[in-house]
Image 1: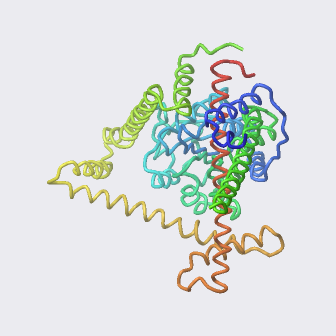
Image 2: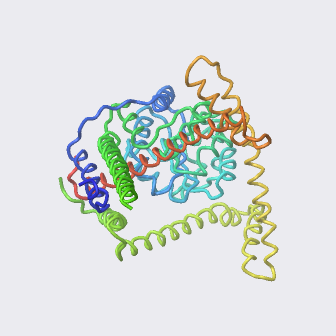
Length: 281
Length: 200
């Protein structure tokens, strides 16, 4: 029985894993959720901003990481829009502006006025060098937005020249250039608070910045999204997906456990057989 | 509970299924979708790159801003690498780019990633978290301290540093698995919700 388990086709495991995803999505289990300190800090910071504040959102991500970050991004956008915070979006990754558009369309900003309440400035090549240029002169680095409209006359930029006039920078990141570059070019030298919505794989890398308070808040992937949705009382895809994620985790742990049991039992059996053969000869 | 009639959703759904089909086994459908992704990504990058050139070079030049001639010239010099006789010229803008990039990084790197991280370790030893942070920092640093042979106290400290790093790698790996699962959950929500319409 155990040796059969050890030789099971991996596609069978994939199928069982797929069911562990689909069942909780169709019938949510309502598993308990804890709001982490980093998510709470991000919420508190945005909550403390007065209406009309300007927040820069840098969409430094690839399409491959978008599904993980989209629920958290939409939740934060909804919170900002409800608070009347104006959003200046930009990207230093080529796919960023299109993905920013998708998140904006799915949030409460879709009902706000473009150019006054929010703007998508598009993509600027050059990574960290470009970030440094934008930090000093936003409309100089982005003379036109993603839709090729001139930015200088947009009401959102009245009195907004550089990042020193910005209340918060939120970096939506799947890699570099991303959080470390923003901290180097804006956070530390200009004393602008930085928060991040980040893929779970980068949480361990960015945790030291939270400890040193160079990052004010961090929303990690789907778990962070579910927490943020609970905080703003607008349950969405983050909450819906968390059950599926937890069920899949449990299933993977079960597979790992069974795999290890099979491995050790098989190894012991082989050793016993070898000992018996040795004794017989 | 209705299936999407949006063409873009259908394309995204079929492409997603094509990529996931690799789990079953490599097949022609997967390879077509993979090639399509590479092509579309390259085309997208070219279009956005041209947008940058148009907004930051062509238009300002047309409006009489002659200062942009310098970066345009430096940019064009990069292309000389395709001509053997003139390829050395491309080193000038490359050197400029490297120098600028290194300078900008260094300016922030020392303050942000060395000084501020050291400052963040000035912690009172009044909680288990703080004790772990300080012990972990010393232990990991001693692992990379090769001036003294790793024996005795330094050896023990380096060994503990190794354990700390193993824990960190484990946490990073676990987070990565979580991230991949989140991605798949997102795709399933798209397939079951946006495409098939069977999710609320």
